[in-house]
Amino acid sequence: MTKKRTFNPNSYYHVIMRGNNRQSIFRTKEDMFELRRAFLHVHQRHPFTMLAFCFMTNHYHVLIKPQAESSLSKIMGLVNRRYSDSYAKRYNHIGQIYQKRYFAKEVDSRLGLLAVSSYIHRNPIETKVPMVEHLRDYPYSSFPLYWDEVKPAPPFLDRELLKNLLPPPFEKTNAAYCRYCLTYRQTAEEDPHEEEMEPPVM
Image 1 (cartoon, rainbow, N blue to C red):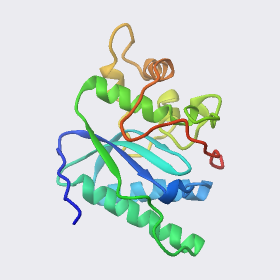
Image 2: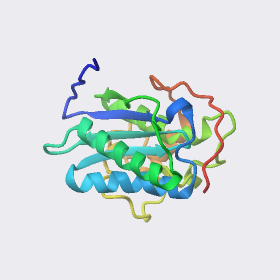
Image 3: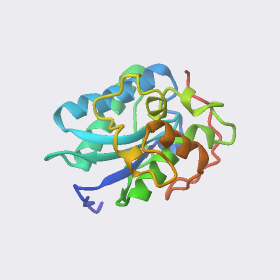
Image 4: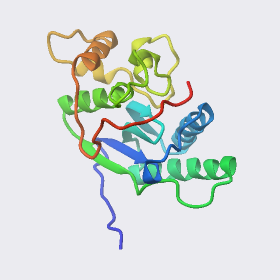
């Protein structure tokens, strides 16, 4: 029997969801659009805040905290169900598309939030063959939204918190936060890197 997980409603969580057998289930522009739309749809009824996200071809990362009476289990269950239903219709697919239930690890310190968000944002350049030369050019991540604050962000993305957590000598700006991400290579539990992945369609 699957053990029910409990979550601290006041904490952010690093959530990872993988395709079954590491298959590329987020390969095209349409796939990425549908995944983003799933988060937007669920956010309307079950609000949450994100500090970072990155959608790769065979998995995705989010740094997320539920709001109000929402729960992480409910949010992730609805997002993953909505995307899998869309995937099944678009590809005439029968069967499971996810490897297992999502991984979630609590991030409960300011340095932890900086490290995990940086790790998430660096995903496209940490594969065996980097997917882009510059992180600002990877369109399926929140990094470009920190790099260029003029770009409209989804309503669930908070671009104010991380810059205020930066230690000296960094300034409290999103430009400085981007420099932090580009300067420090991070590691994260449950996600060994150096994967071989084809880049998604840009």
